[in-house]
Image (cartoon, rainbow, N blue to C red; front, side):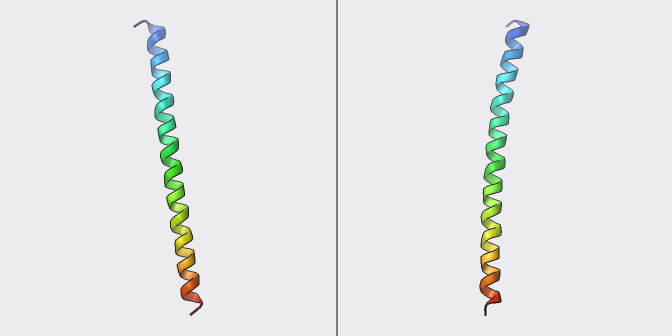
Length: 49
């Protein structure tokens, strides 16, 4: 591989890693939002008693 090929390979590899990290962050955010929503719903149900 030439130096340019190595640079291109690393850039592609970094993009894939960044995309996977972004997807993971979105998943964690969705789970967190769902958990907070469920906790709020549960607390409102308890408060109404």
